[in-house]
Length: 249
Image (cartoon, rainbow, N blue to C red):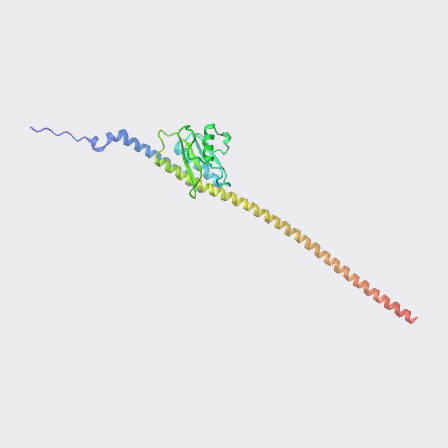
């Protein structure tokens, strides 16, 4: 007597049973982070076309996008001391629930100021463990010039994809900071050129005035010479008349 075959285990075939406990949750988590990455890139792309706001607009958007991606309690974008001297702002920090990053470190809590100090000093890692900070360097031409750091609020440690998004944002920040330095230097050169132009214009006006005065003096000298010639000729004629009369008499 043969043993009847059991019905196929559909859960085993489809993987629903095993995936429901692990793979599906990982998929949902990965999908959510992908959506956050897309939102971050979308916000950056919109900031890139707002050229009238200058470099700061893009830097603020980088901080907002990074904070949103990490669900960060605090997000910092800072330049290391001695790097990109002319770039402004030197620091931007955003607290959770806020929309506008601040550039005044006096408004930051001590924990955030310590992280900022480590970035400014060029330290690769923090000196103390004060929470789940995530930091990626801001690199320009192969040289670290600062960092993008966040006190993340994710349920788990950031995955490589999250760090890749942060590096993309940090690269955008590096380009924008370099642009900021060049932009401010260009403004300084423009102001210098405008000052020199104004100085040249003032000198040209002064030269024109002096030339006009010189022409007036030349006319007065010409009149004086003509009068002198006339007086000399009159004197000569008078002497001739005098001598003639004297001889006649």
